[in-house]
Image (cartoon, rainbow, N blue to C red):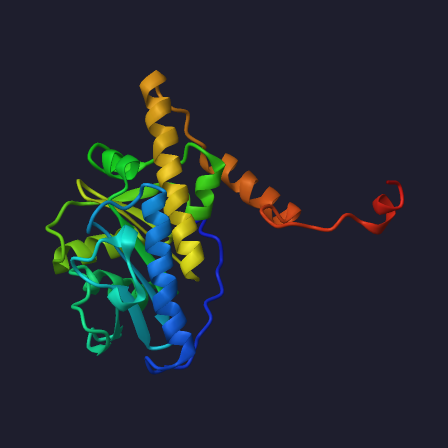
Length: 242
């Protein structure tokens, strides 16, 4: 069942590196990397992050220490992978990032070697939907078959695993998430790591219960009806009763 929530992806006109918008995006990618590092999802040079601005993509440079990344260590490429700004070579997983943008039309991509997610990806063929919050990722998280990093084979298997999902695991490798914005892609990475941790702890105690299709659909209907995940003002009638 495809339970991916519907996103609206904004389209921004192409900009040069001198534009404030693209400069801000490079800074935002660096900020996202430092946050993911602080959360324990990135270690050393492992992983990569990107964000799209129109027909350009700001992506982390290969070999950079991501938890200490600066905007100057974020390279800008077009959708064909041609470097248009920056002094450093982009990540070796560039084609994976560009493939996600081409196929899924998203705004940002996060790839980590987060410990919980990587551990699950070393064991399972898919991460079952054990908590309703996983529906924000599309439900069950598929594990793409193992392939050498930076290869077309890896990119193709990961793209397939992402169909109808905003997250996937990569066998014996790590995790990937995307979102309409960089903040959302980071949130999805954090949510995936949390879900993997929940599964591991549950599996250590027994066989985790899995939400079936009917239960998942009921959660989606309730979330839509109640505006789950958004703040709402108190109705005027109730304000008067305070």
